[in-house]
Image (cartoon, rainbow, N blue to C red; front, side):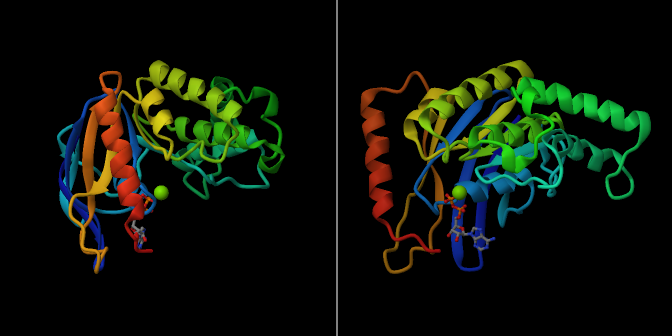
Length: 260
Ligand SMILES: Nc1ncnc2c1ncn2[C@@H]1O[C@H](COP(=O)(O)OP(=O)(O)O)[C@@H](O)[C@H]1O
Ligand SMILES: [Mg+2]
């Protein structure tokens, strides 16, 4: 479904991603780990279409991916964006209203009713029905992430991109969110890319785990070389030895000064 072909991304002299190639099938759940600053968020932005590759290409069903965000791709960040003066339900509906409404995203009458019904459907599926008339600031951290997921899913994307979505949540809440994501992934046949800094979360949720790291390193000029996929592991078939190797490589690259 998706192919990364010799992908490079740099910001001026800062090479972030270097010669990254991979193929991903429909319905896979890829989890991405790597030290801070190694290019994980940049990689998701390339997939989302808010950033463009410097060299190489990303193909979706064999065609170059549109270089602007489209409804086929949804994203959930750790810090999410909502309109504070709109209710939970209105915030979810807004994503569809922007698609349908010709002027300022406003939709009226029966079209608006249909969109609100859709919003209710997605709020139900993420467990937010009781909170749908509340305002964002009245939600707990876990509920805010549920809202962010509903906002992404109402566009019915095939690709769901998650950038450390549960990093700020308490362990108990995080477990609930894991179950939610796994069930949505199964129900809606999503292809998921999820960045996490928690290796065990990566192994638990993913069908495939990628480690991003630099293959080459210039201590005098850390920006000179970029990261690529250094481990690509089918989850479940990973032995103790490769797990230790990953931990070693993560610990090693954490020592590398990362340019900001
Ligand atoms: N818009 C941008 N302009 C310039 N440099 C950027 C931009 N976005 C990210 N970077 C740089 O790219 C590198 C990777 O950042 P990022 O993808 O956010 O890392 P990660 O998500 O793995 O922590 C960092 O060196 C960061 O400073
Ligand atoms: Mg990041």
